[in-house]
Amino acid sequence: MKGSDFNRRKFIKGSAATAGLALLAGLPKETLASYEHLPNKTIYTGPEGNIVTNPIAPKIKFGVVGINHSHVNAMVDAVIRGGGEFVSFYAKEPELTGPFARKYPQAKLVASENAVLEDPSIQVVLSSIIPLERAPLGVRVMKHGKDYLVDKPGIITLEQLAEVRKVQKETKRIYNIMYSERFENRGTVKAGELVMAGEIGKVIQTIGIGPHQVNPKTRPDWFWDKKYYGGIICDIGSHQFDQFLYFTGSTEAQVVSSQVGNVNHPNYPQFEDFGDVVVRGNKGMGYVRNDWFTPDGLGSWGDGRLTILGTEGYIEVRKNIDVGLPDHGGNHVYMANNKGVQVIDASKGPLPFGELFVNDVVNRTETAMTQAHCFLATEIALKAQHNAQVIPLKLS
Image (cartoon, rainbow, N blue to C red; front, side, top):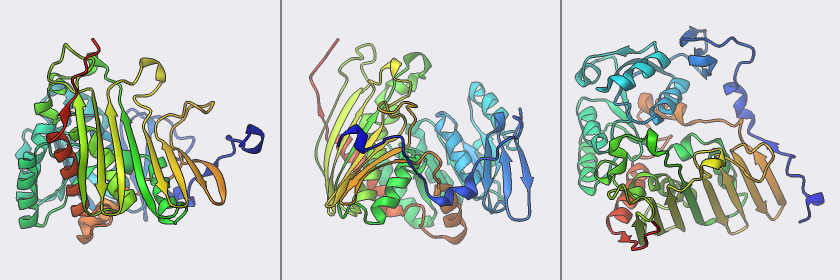
């Protein structure tokens, strides 16, 4: 198709459902966060003026234990949007607690993990603690009668997975992993709407690409040793397996092949900078590639992409950046089907996960993500990681 036939700047805007979540323009930036409780909603004004509008007043109270990855900020904001009130948090690292406390001054910094777990007013605990510690913490959370929302990777060994599954079955608590590349990416949410509407027919395959920027000077020591983070497929790849299951509708899956390697970081021998996987489900197929080779000049931490092949068309999501467009913004969805070609700007689209998760806590439902899906995505990642062949290639 010639450029004159297809104007890439004519975007189709996101769903009208975004209206209820639109940012309020013209408000001054604030140093501290604040709540404004109105009859039918709560407006949360975060640091630097970021506005999160709750559809209704808070329905649950939650706490945080462990803030070792900045993903915790998006998790907190999502639950606040969904109707959560942030009560308290604990982290053992003073260099992390100061900035976090300034970002969320409504939450009390407490002296111990138990001060959160034993607070009867708290229904949910969030965490982005060091990955090795996430599953054991989740077990303690569930045994305290609370639900758990954890950053990925939420579990890093098959032994941890078995224990988590056992305790979750016994306690009937929610153990959700925040697969943010789907839940917190508006382009991927929009792709889900299109697939569910049948726009590309039945899904045959997903291709998930998860490149990341390594930024060595900003990384803590645990980042470089896979015994703490589980390996590249376990860590980053968990996002792609979640999307593979979601878009194909698969409820069973097996790893066909997987490989990992440290091809260009000899100073960190326990680090993995590349991995890829072929996976087959009972309703579709998938390919996953993860790496730590995003160049500094890109302007984004990673050119993450998702391609969904259907029987009647295909979709590509350019998640964080679109180098082919003048503004280079993310959340662009490309779709080609029997009706034609569209480029959709989903950057103003909704992020429904937070509200769905909070409703699940209140109603004991599984609308945000089923427990079976959550565990299966992790199980595939863990098996792919465990059985991966080691790439002998060394580039340095």
